[in-house]
Image (cartoon, rainbow, N blue to C red; front, side, top):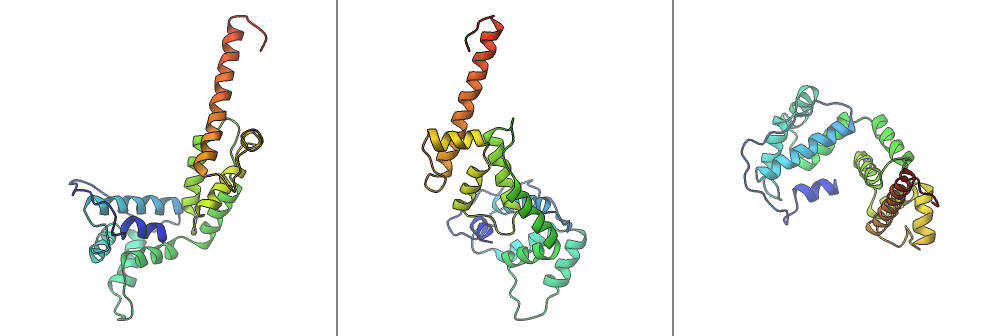
Length: 212
């Protein structure tokens, strides 16, 4: 909810010029966190391209949201928001998105997303960049994404043991103290060094040399 507020409601948000021809996908009520998040990202970009971000045009955002729903999701919107006559209900875009998520993204999907995030670790042959990008994508699926500190700890603990050992023992870094950027750069630096060493070894072997 906080992330959504920052991307839509913040008074300091930079408005784009109106971009013509921008289209947005529709959400049909699939029980799929990835599908929901992709649609939400499309919708946010559409709002910003049409100057519908910021604290004011919330009624317009609700209308645009409704236009980009289909199937069961469209039916739900019409039943629970458009036709809502309860004067105590003050629907806005943020509340509507949260309610839509609760309606169609099941508890089981939420639990599976948490399990995938908790179990995820870097594998041999995977780049540090790809590992971090995948971990960030898994974190975005969570009902309650981790804060910066918790994500940093998860990133460090999931590194390959040889990389984690190097940045902790050799570099003297700590996941509890140092920033994610520092840990990430140290891991990438080691990755580059090891790749260069492998290249040198292959070159030497190719020329019939020895010693390494």
